[in-house]
Length: 243
Image 1 (tube, rainbow, N blue to C red):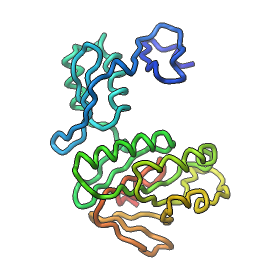
Image 2 (cartoon, one colour; image 1 turned 30 degrees about the vertical axis):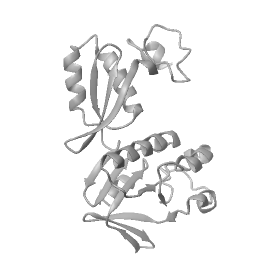
Image 3 (tube, rainbow, N blue to C red; image 1 turned 120 degrees about the vertical axis):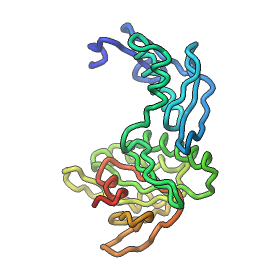
């Protein structure tokens, strides 16, 4: 509905919800984006790509979805800004808080991400694997997941049960963040037993380490490795040592 009333429409034709959209719009197709590569620049992750006949671009972050989102932004801005200004602006954009937010890069690599839908989690895990490969680290990817809302968890349960299958070497599960919803009975241990997950009450940042707690007792300290946290609840504050 909102798209019909937009002054300018830029759409990705590969999106199943938009592929048959009939109103006037600037369109982007998968074939318009070429030569996607992933690099480290000053230790930061970037995606490079070529768009139509506009040349090469570099955007912070990793993954095909980053190249797609950046391409949509480029096409949207072409009428307003010079191409080189767009290119430079894109290069200087460092993402937003809680989207592949790299909190630290030492013996323990710690990333916070807002993803709270199975599709988002799967895409971000793919980016995490690319980042780990760029860093040339052999560490396993540890996921700390806090489901956001019982309703979302129940509505997407089957997808959640599959979204960690690739690129997640160990799964740690926090209690569901209810966001004021009434608590619902769900046996997470049964539904996610194929991951042999670790269930904790909370995670606590202690210096450069992470402590896993059950009943206020530390059951494990993670001192090194590659950890990424997923969720739209208070996990972001736990990972930052702000609660």
